[in-house]
Length: 307
Image 1: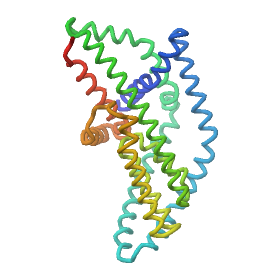
Image 2 (image 1 turned 90 degrees about the vertical axis):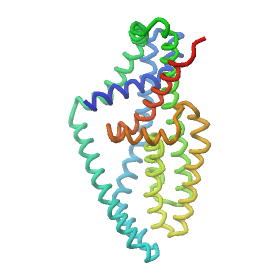
Image 3 (image 1 turned 135 degrees about the horizontal axis):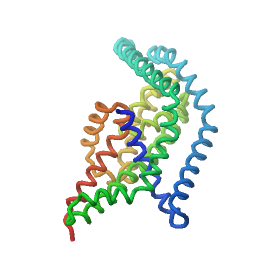
Image 4 (image 1 turned 135 degrees about the vertical axis):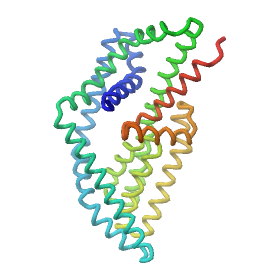
């Protein structure tokens, strides 16, 4: 059931994400052709990026995983003895947790890759379902308007348009912010001479699609590799620079690029992330904020005073 809900939710997000391009192109060609052009362009872009980056990502990721246990030992060795026992216990628990979650993630990946239906769902079904949502958008709108009192139909149309604008705009803006954060993290780590800067930055960018999660992912491996390579001084420098990056994201990038698209207070963002994660796991974390933003936009637009 959760997988079905996730597929539908991701298809809706994909439809909203690509809708501005489809709408722009359909001013010159029919909508089905516009959808095909957009999906083909995205597919070519994704395949090209994967072809160029996959070898480096695989090689550096594999090397980082192999090096991590030894780096943890070397990092602890340069820390003052008074802190070694505490940190050793902490990283021991962390290793157990990472191993557990990593094993569960690998089992999930293998289960999906063994299932032809899973591959089709991920690669084909979501874009196709999104295309149907875009093709049938007027039908969905008419169906909703048919059950709404005549006095509220105008506000309902405004609410639907606002949901599309807010959710699609938030997802696009968050992708831009996450990409910029990944670039900044890479610059910091590369300048500080931290090994595996590229894979750490890439992982940070991916996890930063969920608000607040990118910073958590970035700090642990960055500080460990910085400690092992340059001792406490380099680790402190890396820590300060990473704090500056994520403060820059929180104070400048997110407000300026994401802006007021969600209309959600930071405390409410944390709450919806906790609820989404508890109910639907990783998918819940990713979907929680756009869904909450869409609900908020719909309620606000629907109940706004009509002229």
